[in-house]
Length: 453
Image (tube, rainbow, N blue to C red; front, side, top):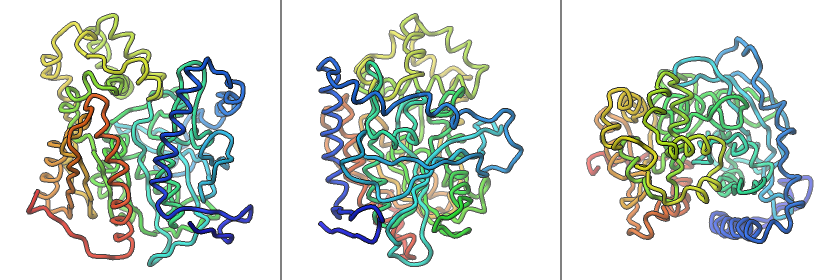
């Protein structure tokens, strides 16, 4: 344990070098605390509720109408952001100053949109080579309701509003560690997550990749930061965030050649959504299928009538409810449900429908070449995001001459439908991924293993 009085003018800050272990414990304790409140009749609800008030977010998160005619990545508005690990703000600090941002980006069909996020200016100096590096952080699955946006959750730590709308900000585990090590972070909310009036375009390849790249541009336009205009940038993400990071890596050359990309960590990226559906079926996180269908309705509204025509009343209810939920609520209400009762046709037939398949093909990763090294991580026995498509993604990128390192986690199957072996590798692989990104910023040679994939 060490304390550093120089990093903050407010008070000495103590931190453990192995923040991830402490963060994992905090996650377990905090999640247990949420459950205890829910199951005890909300005995302390009055103490919680003031930390989430939708009205306080309305002005910032409402997009301007019309949208400003500015280039992708330009800042639309900013404001200071309160950063806490839990609602009271008394259990420690994220060692950074937070700025909430709204910036111009591009949706999945090439139209202008706005996206929100958070920039973290570290209190600690960057101990490595060159100027302070920027990591563009793609969050994992949060849900689809506006209240789930990471830029809102960093103000709360643990989100709750009556009655089952709850969420623990698990991304703070890694952000707290990265900023303590001197990395600047900008975390996107993605399209529609937080932004009022727009449905979150969950796992849309183009929308998420654009949001990541434009976040990098927006962060460097902020005044009074330690970033340099053309400094080094890397992408980070796991699960949904892994897909967003992978998309940014392969879109960078064409969409944002001005961003100086030095590397990408993409953990458990959903590289082929068709293969994900049978894995999600009957799992604790079957609600992600509802998020994905609502994402299709937002980006491809011409497909909505046909999709709704094959939904049973239960299916309609499933899709409509998940649209406003965070993961915590979707888990409690839909865990372990099977998908077939939500459809009036066999799912296997629907997956071969040309219109549906065409939409899925648009989301497939691996058709473009990343312009910088990529570290891919996947658990061979991942019960939610299948391993085989991640391997195929590595092969596709390797065939294009990319610098790819593919690492396989061998945690054996355990409580598969509870998706334990999807969540745990995020913690297990996190520290090596941080070291890998630090090596990219410090000019250490890569160790590609395309010949072994």
